[in-house]
Structure formats: structure tokens, C-alpha cells
Picture (tube, rainbow, N blue to C red):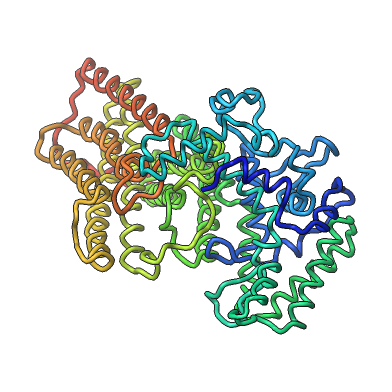
Amino acid sequence: MKTLIPFILLLIVAPVFGADEINAQSATPAFTPALNFSFIERIAVQEGGRKKLFQTLAHEAIEELIGRPIFGGNPSLKDKTSGTDLGAIELYLSIWQFPEYWTSKPLVLVSYRPLRVAIGLNPDEKHFSIQELAHNTRLQELIKSAIALRHAEKDKDLTDLQKESEIIEQRLDIFSSIMSADRLLAILPHPKRADGKWLSMRGYQENRIDPNAQPYYTTEQFEAVNAEFDAMLEAYRERKPEAFVKTSRELQESLRALSPNVYPAASALELEIQYNHNRPFGWAWMFYFPAALFGLIALRYRGRANYIIAMALFACGLALHVYGFTLRCMIAGRPPVSNMYESVVWVGFGAVMFGLIFELRYRARYFMICGASAGFACLVLVDQMPVIMGNVNAPGFESQIKPLVPVLRDNFWLTIHVLTITLSYSAFMLAWFLGHVTLFSHLFRPSKKAEHHELHNFVYYAMQIGVLLLACGTILGGVWAYYSWGRFWGWDPKETWAFITLMCYLFVLHGRLAGWWGNFGLSVGAVVCFQAVIMAWYGVNFVLGNGLHTYGTGAGGEGYVESAVAVDVVFTIAAIVRNGAFKAPTPFGEPQIPQPGR
């Protein structure tokens, strides 16, 4: 981690470019006529241990720098001088080629209002220039104090202001990396090895100077590609649409021809183009939400038309969910097992699938409504969390596709364990939503005993599935731990809370069968026990901050989680009080399975 002022002044006064290049790139950029980026965006880049599209790299960098739009989509910024809306690739190239122009523009997102107030910025603005931030001594002091605590391994002592100042420093690093793209943009593939290191244009030139370095390509090969690279950038700076298309296409073809066996296949790159452009997860929740609404209408008014509309919307959301998962798995080359973002998307998918299976079995509408609600809740959470937190790279919630760390690669037991245990979360989430519907019915429709009995049965079915999957997933986790760490069980916080969660649900089910409480108690347990799932799923990773399973320590969000839990507790207590006041005990007998096709 760097200190702020010397680093930014270095960027402004003496970038990595030579003196002639600084003069050539200091002019005011033009944004008309429009350019076609369809070829340059398909150039492959090695970054963060993965080969990705230049489109992906530009979107991720600009999104982190300026923030994510409220409803997703590609990040964009309106240049106040020209009045032009700039997309991610346009803005990336403009910063790269005209860095001095952008140092004075309000570009860097400072989303945390208390930080804006604390360092003397305008609290009503959210974007500020590099120059404003570079010369802000209060910001520098916060960053220095955060660095000192990090070095002293006192991460938990960091204040919110210090954490937010670190995020601003990361954004300034992003600006630096874009300015230094000549040195950092690794587009030259390794000549032979698929896992070999790619080089940037300037990096390749420096590599050739090293007498101990083995040149990747002949001088003629490199000079030809380098000439196309320079011609493309010149066509961009001079705003020549035809020349830009021609040179970017030639550069793309030449880079592939250098190492066709190492360069990603065109079909693989097109999959990533589809994923970036279509945003399937962002669209899926927009179908789940109306599906749940029409499901409620179909529950109230039993007409066939309302039910068909609800199921059609439900199916569209599920299709987009599956489409997104398929693309993501094909791009990453692995199942979704790496971070909180992927697990939330997967858990939502599992809840939707369980809801669909039960709905097709019983035609009860409740399963479809709760499944759609679970899918909506999960997908809108991961879609809007970066906007709420003001940080697209909040630890654990990064939507970027990244390679797994070595211990997690090519591990069959890890994949089976994670997918199984997170599917148990899906079943418990479905039971949690069904439990809320049941308690709501007890709270506002206390005389509907037949309805209550049916709902209690539905909660029971979902909980059974969850307990079975959680038990299997916990055992499989021990098998994975044995292969990875040489021991089956070590009372790691994640293991401990998985065991606690399993015991909580087993206790509720056993108490129901033993007659300690009735069906109403079972539904209360479905709601209350989900707090153990939240602790095992979120708390271990983001709050406890220790153990072998943590990946998001310090990401924040505890206030939102605690508030949601508090509201849930109040609602549950209200339902319990209402049920006790109405004197409507539920019999302790075995749940009666309703007839399908009702």
C-alpha cells in the first residue's frame, strides 16, 4: 500500500510516459465522431490470473473508479465539458491517452458522506477530481493511519473513515493503472504455455533489454504488432472511425496469430461478451418480483389466468438465472464456489428450484411465491449491494470472475461440499419465507385453521430437505478438510457454526415429533433457526474474521444484517403473542400431506 500524495503527484507531474508522449497526450480529447469498439473490446488481456476481454477489464476498472449505476448496466460518465456520455471503454481509452485532462475532472467516487464531511469535501457531491483528492491532507492522514494499523495487524481497530479512505486510495490506484496501460495492459500472449505470463507492449520491450530474458517472439513479429498497436491508439486520439476499426481489427488478428494455441478461442470470448452485455442475473430479479406479485394475486383470486401469468414470469426469471449460471461457469471453467457473491446467486437459484419442484407437485401457489421471493431477494441483494455500500469490490461481494486459489482448484470434494451445503441454505431460505407466510397468516388471519395446517406442512417439507442436505454437506466438508488440510474436523468457526445450525434445526424437528411443541412452534423454528444460517453463511466470513473459511473480513454491512434480524425478531414475537391470545393450538400429530394437483 502506498502513501497518497507522493504517489498521485508522480502520476500528475511525471507519468510513466516519456516527455514526448506527455506532450502528445496532453491535448483536450474529442468524443466525436463516435467510434466502433467491437474489435478492441474483444482483445484478450491477462489480468488477475485470468484471461479476460479488454471489455471486461475496462468495465471493471471504470466501475470501481466512478461507481455502479443503480440498476446495473454498463458504467458511464457524462463529461461536463463536452456534454457527452462516455461508456466504460471510451472513458478508459480517454484516461489512458489524455491523462492530464482527466486529473481535474470530477471522476473518483467518494460515496461515504461522513468521509466527505471529515476531509472537507462538498458533502452534497459524490465525485471529485484526482487533484482535489491528491492535495487533501486530511485524506492522506487517514490513509497513513490505516496503513499503520494494517502493518501492526490491528485490522479490527480500523474506523469506518479509515476503511473508506482505503477504498479511495484503491480508486486512485485504478486511475494510475489506466494511465500506465502501456506498461500494465498484458495483451501479448505467451508463445507456448497456456499458463504462461503475458506481457504488455512496454513490458515486452523492457523484457528484451534484459540479457537473461528469453524473447517471446522475433524482432520482426513484435515490431509488426507494436506498429498496429501504435496505429490504433493514434486513430483513437485523432478520432478517425475507419482507421480505428481497421487497426483494432488487425491488432486483434495479429495478437491471436502470435500464439493461436494459447490465445482464448473466439467462441469463449463471445460467451463473455454475452454475459457482460445481457446481465442475466440483473434481469432475472426483475421477473421474479412481478412473479411473486402475480402469485399473491392468484392466491387471492383463484382465476387460472393470474396463475398462468405468475408461472410464466417465474419461468422467465428462472431461465435467465440458469442462463447466467451457465455462462458464468463456462467462462470461469468451474462451479460457483469462490465468494459470497456466487454463493448468494447459487442459494437463490436453489430456493427457486425447490419452490418450482414443490409447486409442480402441490399446485399450492405458496411455493412459487416464496421461491420467487427468495430468488428476488438474493439477486437484488448482489445487484444492489455495490450501490448501497458504495464499493463494487467489497470483500466477498466482488462480481468479477476470478480464478480460485491453488488449494481450491481441481478439488472434487470441495465442489460437492460447497454446492451441497449451500443448497441446504436454499431449502432453509424457502422454509424461512414459508415460515413468514405462516406467521403472517397466524397474525392477521388467526381463524384460518385449515390454511395454517397446510402452511405448516409446507414448512415441514422444506426443513426436511434442508436438514438432509446440511448433514450431507457437513460430512462432505470433513472429507474435503481431510484431503486439503490433513484432518477431518478442527472446530474451525465455519465448521462449528455448520454444526450449530444443524443442531438447531434437528432440535426443532425433534421437538415437533416429540410433542414439545406443535406445528406453530415448527414454523417459528423455521424463522428463528435461519439466524443460525445467517451466522454460518455471513457472520463467520464477515464478522468473526478468523478461521480457514473467511474471505470478506471488514466488508461491512453488519448494520443492515442486524437491523433485518431485529425486525424479524419483532415480527416473530408479535405472531407468537397473537397466536397465544387467540388460543388456537395446533395438534401434535404427524403432518398430513395435501393432495397434489389441487
